Image 1 (cartoon, rainbow, N blue to C red):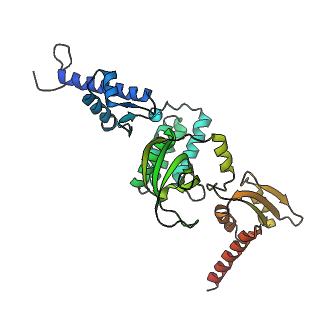
Image 2: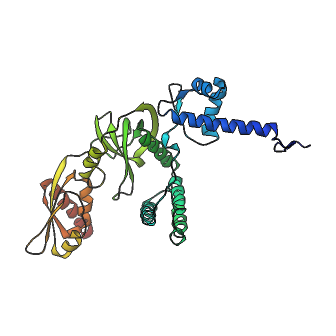
Image 3: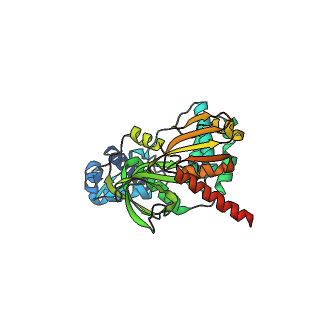
Length: 341
């Protein structure tokens, strides 16, 4: 006989080891029970009743779900619940589907400024669905991605926002605005997390949701969020089609601004290149007699499309609105003056 806990005695399991196994099985059972009860969850006493244990033991098992199994819990009002999305089914993709997802993931790693362990592990999981001829490209991509600096606070905020989005939870955030709309200094906001949306223009992630303070849908750059806390309150999400239609007005991310009708004229030298791409769902194109391209669209505000217009330099002219035309003209004049020096 030895003191080894794993020792087998007369074909039976060592009592200490069996006790550990029994507790582990009970914790997993508690996890399943909480999952089955959805958002409302259960109290520790109710969990104890369902597992034939005391309230104190049930509480320890509930805490172990986070500490031992690593699954996040929702806590509020003495009740505990686990998100239905905690357990996700295995991803089964056809070869073209897996290739498309790989390209999307590769795009995400190329544009990412910081390292996110969730994206890293998701990429590894994707690798297992790919044939070897494609999977071999994952490791070099991840090696490059892993060299990015880590922003632990940003990753923490993303995980909380992802949970709030999946569970339709209201979050409280401390937000430092850019100052475009006269907002200055960090402010506390209660937001219904409608959507997490990446920006191709800024390579950043944005939270789109109902701001209770403004009583309107607002867009928040996740990098400007200083603090995130999940509340025990839930919201009713708007119709997904309505939300998608509102986003159609955005040039990139911002959809909460007044609709502006933009009229541009591109010189003949770039007209064909502009026409190769559909830049906005509302755009209309017309080729003029001299070969220039007249381009028109209705977009939400001019903050985002302004940068796109400036990117074409002197190859585009803003015809309307006058305010945007004047703004672009002043910008070019300042640039010309700077180069004169």
